[in-house]
Image (cartoon, rainbow, N blue to C red; front, side, top):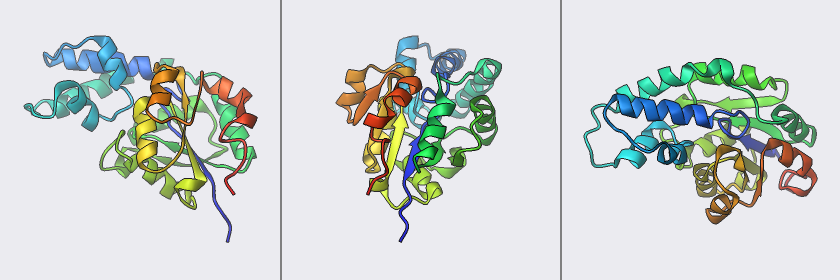
Length: 225
């Protein structure tokens, strides 16, 4: 029986330099609806989807009446930054290097179909991307494990032990852990190594370029046996 090993990559903040744009968009969207929060607090919530982020920032036991409007405002504000989105250093090369080692590369994103199309164009690595998840594939976003499990299914992986998740936030690490998948974490999203290791990351690298340089010594060095 052939074993399929999957390298699951978060997109925002991991492969593309977007977390500051998301922070600004959420901060302004919340302010438009009279929820003014420190930008630093908003930034540390980026990596969650709207369903989780608003509860995290505003509390679960509140009036949820503006949630849909706030999320729509975020989406519109974030879209203004699309022309400025760029890949993180050597991100596409990292995906190609993983594919070259035999990993099935999957983008594990909870972005909308329209947004993921923009991100894929900016990344320019479709030649090695085997599958992609979007918001339509999950009932709950990170730190729930749904996204990681959906990516595993899309990859046709032989199970969590035959996969590695690469992400940039503590929410990525938590989601991977709950799905039973080891997580390689990057500091490119703004979380410090101690935070990422503290919530269970197997290893931490500065960014995609450093992970590519260290690939031979990482969890992505060889396929699980």
